Length: 372
Ligand SMILES: Cc1cc2nc3c(=O)[nH]c(=O)nc-3n(C[C@H](O)[C@H](O)[C@H](O)COP(=O)(O)OP(=O)(O)OC[C@H]3O[C@@H](n4cnc5c(N)ncnc54)[C@H](O)[C@@H]3O)c2cc1C
Image (tube, rainbow, N blue to C red; front, top):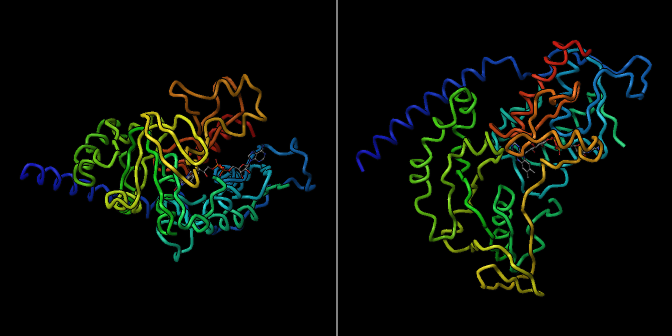
């Protein structure tokens, strides 16, 4: 016990030192700031919509497209963003109670900070407005995921399939609205309380150059201090370190915002077996057990790696995009495809933070290679 306490104390002191250092780096960093210089219009002078008149064409006005647009605007490089829906529409259509799981300082678009009054974890609706406002200053051409709230499920037995950030939050939301949620958690997961992210959210940037095993070595200690043994609750935690999972497999840990406490209290049930088949309201699981549900919600993931780009990029190019771990390498020129860049597929500090970093690399690369 004494040994454990000593390990815990040195870990926390070390982590605190890293956080303070990182905060100092963040405050001094010129990377993100208010739009303090007039925004230069990069639209070509005749106001033409012809893509060939722009140096860079961006497909999609989500975080990735807007981040790159902001940096190109600042660099004075002409660009156009094509958006099939509305800027930030992905956030407009997600479930009501969604808030970012990453802290606000690393989730902003370039040169435009969130206002001081925004909370540490920004809401979905605020983010959608922020993206729309950002798009209004940039050259954007416009021409779940269905789950919006647990309100309509009051009193119902609901099976939530999948326990990523969305699945765990939906279960909580359903319980808050008076439904009886059960979650299906098929495989081992990584999960951290969001309170840890609040405190250590900036820390990873400083630790980035260290090999993943250094980050991962704290896993056993953190999990035993934070969660204890979760097997009685049908939840297995991954044995691999969570940083390795993020870096190699681009899988972010679940940020727990209270679901685990409800699971421990028995308010939210957990099933760990796959669904074998569904017969009316009865779900038959692979171990032979059954359950009766009024609704089944799929929270099995938003596909990032087989994204919409496969509809407009040639299939031989799409085939080249995944790396050996079957995730898209992003933030750099696609190998053997001059002038094609993918943006927004890394998870290390959260996708939005990585998008911010990658968009800066891309603009530098475009300029260095004299593509514009
Ligand atoms: C529920 C959820 C919660 C998340 N929480 C966090 C978090 O807390 N922190 C974090 O860092 N990351 C988070 N992420 C990840 C982050 O949201 C995404 O990585 C980020 O939004 C990706 O931005 P994007 O621009 O690549 O894609 P999107 O935001 O999906 O935007 C893509 C845009 O492209 C448009 N488009 C698609 N195809 C075409 C086409 N052919 N022509 C024109 N336009 C097109 C779409 O309409 C859309 O507007 C979360 C993701 C989800 C799903």
